Amino acid sequence: MVTRRLTEQDAEIGVHAIRLLKSVDGYPIPSALYLSNFLSRPNNVFIVAVDGASPVGYLVAYLLDRIDRDQRMALLYDIGVAEHLRKRGVGTWLVTELKRICSDEGAMMWVHTSRSNVAATRLFETTGGVPQPPEEGDVIYEYSSLNFAIPHVGDV
Image (tube, rainbow, N blue to C red; front, side, top):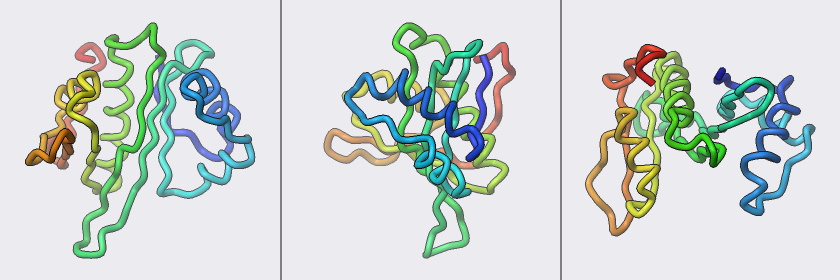
């Protein structure tokens, strides 16, 4: 399996990933032109995990500049893994790749999810996310540069 951040030249791979992994939930499939424009913006991050020639996972994040301090932030917005490969490390590989990008960018990372989403909370906790003070039913995990250690491939 390989994970990589897509560029605007990879729009067809992104469309294929969305068709296989996200449209099953009723989401529309964007055109290659739309996705190419999305990927041309350096603050948009779309990472795809590919096994052979088939996308098996994706992650979407946004790099943001803070107004109150000189600290970039990355919002992990969406992550999905093919149902038959869940609980096999694909999500960990995707989050690890985003952590590498955040480390390169000097960005802190965060994600918002529902406490009832057990799979997501488990993923974010096992990849170094630190839960923040609770809100009703929701949880925000922060990843600081201190926990951006990248595991060895055999550890994932």
